[in-house]
Amino acid sequence: MHISPLNSKILREFPTKGNNILDIPTPICYSLGMDIPQTLQQAIQYFSDEQVCIDAVAFMRWPDGPRCPYCIGEDANNPYYLKTAKRWKCRSCRNQFSVKKFTIFEDSPIPLQKWLPALWMLVNCKNGISSYEIHRDLGVSQKSAWFMLHRLRLVVKTGTMGTKLGGPESEVEVDETFVGGKLRNMHRDRRERFAAQSGHTGGPTGKAIVHGILDRDLRQVRATVVPNVKRETLQSEVLENVKYGTKVYTDDAVPYDKLHSRYVHEVVNHAEEYVRGQVHTNGLENFWSLLKRNLKGTYVAVEPFHLERYVDEQVFRYNNRATKDNPLTDSDRFLLALSQVAGKRLMFAELTGKNGEIPF
Ligand SMILES: [Zn+2]
Image (cartoon, rainbow, N blue to C red; front, side, top):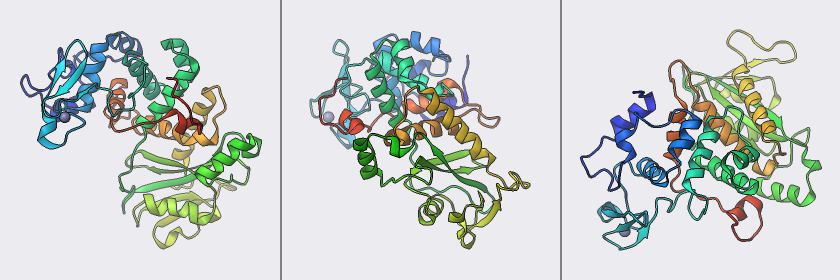
């Protein structure tokens, strides 16, 4: 029996409650940590049964038992399962709902048997996964696969919840990088749409800019697409995400020259040296190379318009990678992502900027 740290955490935090935990057959919680898949091959096999998928999503979404999404408080607590329809019915409001209701999977005709292996691949393929691979491996059209991946990237987006990295004893690296094709090579409509939505006008090279912050102690990265490399843009990223008093390491870029008033700011001059003792940004360099490998591996050019989601995807994998202190497994990453599917939606129109029906 294999119980990985996250699985045992889930078992500890969400203990079973006799027979009430899930009003459904063979709840995954009973087997959680025992026979949940550990490899992609096992995942595809395991999730080939719709009911198993429903159980898994239900357990991660409602660890204390299913809740009616239309009701609040106590009223939401006692829906019953309609086995044949594979839906719940609420005893309070009489509404029926599926496990997909108000999740990223809502309204998708693609079955969970394909969604869950796709999520597994997204969170566990180190160099990212292309829509072509999803198309070929899971038997959906490439267009569907592309849309699935974008929805799933929204699932793994890490919220900061107003928290900050760093602290008086912590070391934080700050850096930015330029990625993707040049904005001026984009089709004019797309460039204008991108500029309108993001305020992005391109960096000195005309490429999109990603700003990153790495907390060395927490081994956590925050990265975001920024519109320019102006001092106020880059410094406000640091001010919003790093506690005052933290040791902050950057290169000698001018935009960071005012950080010393709030931080212990140390600079490595990249024209002369890359490392000066502890002062370097090599941790972020590593993250950038993973991000760029991922962007290349998608086979199709990533428009700056979509770049933020690829960054979110890479941040999730990086922040939840296995380390000596935190030996997360593929199934841990998968379950963690699966616990985040509720309350998120992404419509086709939002992705493409077009109004139209959702063909997926
Ligand atoms: Zn209800």
